[in-house]
Length: 154
Image (spheres, rainbow, N blue to C red):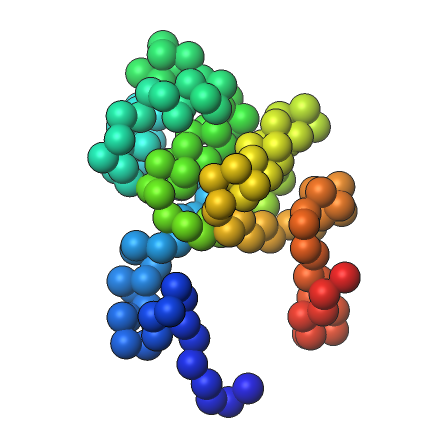
């Protein structure tokens, strides 16, 4: 399409502004985590939320002690959980996740997948995951694939 309108929750994004829309309605989970490395998990989560960070970090499997450590002292799976906690704590209705399980072992990847599915089904989040993993794609409610430059629904 060469013209049209994109609306979100009844609002024209062109009128509200793309950066304002992203800031207020979209949270990101990056494959490389994008945590602030000189902060603790609790401090990283606090950047996106006014809510206390410990309950969500504990819900995602981190202990109070781990939540107070520097993020660089955590495993990859723990860092990914912090990135997910930060996205969930933001209260944004849309979560965009880029290869959220790409660097993780099989068990941790399944834990992360379960958390994302729970976010969609129980917290009413729209979770969009970009992945090369067929195993992860099989667990999605809806799958789109990019084939020969065209987006197609499976």
